[in-house]
Amino acid sequence: EVQLVESGGDLVQPGGSLRLSCAASGFTLSTYWMMWVRQAPGKGLEWVASIKQDGSDKSYVASVKGRFTISRDNPNNLLYLQMNSLRAEDTGVYYCARDFSGQTLYYFYYSMDVWGKGTTVTVSS
Amino acid sequence: SSELTQDPAVSVALGQTVRITCQGDSLKTYYASWYQQKPEQAPVLVIYGKNNRPSGIPDRFSGSTSGNTASLTITGAQAEDEADYYCNSRDNSGNYHWVFGGGTKLTVL
Image (cartoon, rainbow over all chains, first blue to last red; front, top):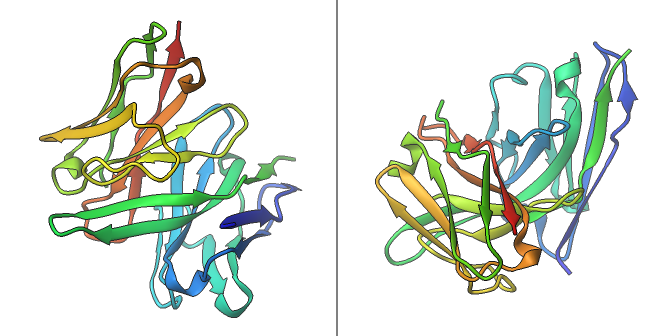
């Protein structure tokens, strides 16, 4: 069964740090772009960061650039999100998701086909 | 960066057809994907590409695009379809960025 399981969420004070992990199973992690998506309490989904299959290319939403770092350990099927200088507005559920992108004869498609259940980050004093 | 706009809430009578829309400049370049999220659950992909359903998604779900507007149509809505629905696409800024719509709360009456 294809599965993603996040861990590492916790209550942390503003300015603190946290590292989230995402364990992949049922598929070969190294063949997919992967990403983190978050959801603030009662709010919508927000893409946070993406990382290429070999880790050589990374992208971030503007609000976390310079504070968060996405990384991966392909041999151990793990995805990470290192979060530094945390702010109250970083509070929410953090999901890891698998990139599902490709092409047919006629068009390209881009989506996220596998999601973990999420891990909760609370930034508060 | 791009933005995607969705109506906050839509309702439909049981068994009727409902359309949920998503507007944004990035949809002139990229097809939208659609996700269903029920309370306290992770999102589930329901439509991707021009109009493709992942395995296990009922065929009452369909997608379409016209200009800068993508639509998710549920034909014969069921009680279990009550959920939040989000569209997303790649950001057309040229980087490997993504953008989500604000979500639409679907109520099945």
